Length: 351
Image: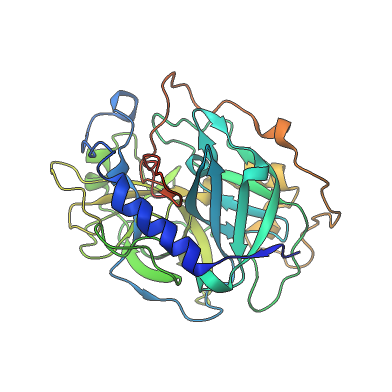
């Protein structure tokens, strides 16, 4: 059930104001190459957006969602993906503040269009962050959002299946989002897409020694000069085509680093970006959503088994869970873009 229409002028105006102000209040990314457990939390400049891409065509990505989170007077922007008529998937850091999951009543999902001014917003009744999400290492960076009512699917609004493909280096993926189109640019008022390539593993392990392969908990992209995600794209989908060329959900935009450089520019040749590998978490996703792994991965068709009852009110008590082992307040790797002024320092994930 659609509950409101987003105002493009208001959204873009607030975003532009936040972008102009947040750099001065943020610490620059440190390009730390130590093990994740030893690294400082990622800085503002680590966030992601679509750089070097092109506009998406109508109905090309009917599962793409624009996530907004209100927190202490500011509103933050992320991406998301509709995986069942009742559930949206995003990055854990998009819905976590100060080691706690935000209230479901402060979250809305814009769906059903490429243009910001045409998106319809849907309420969230429950947020479930992965129990092993750790903001200090950005590991297990995934969360599921239950919508108050199940969505009626159509050509403009549909689900995406999870890819179960065996991935290797030099795979070509498609990332999409409404994020910034350059480090010093503005956010996009329409959905954009860009192709990025995975690996090589040596580049990925230089930034994150715990990275093993594209079939572990993360997908890594590197050496994609001029093509990248940026601020505002955190939580959005990284897509991989199946044998028929249909896009499937492979990853969730998480964070990125520029090793051995003082530059934090998006889209440089040395940027290494990490995405949560969704297929690694299908059993957990099935447990939370009640939908079989076979249905989530497109191996079977038919009903999702979601109940179509309306959730009354917010299940806020069930949202409040600790996230991670860090005792310090969390700064996000790719900043979530703040939409209000005065501007809070933007989080540092690929928000």
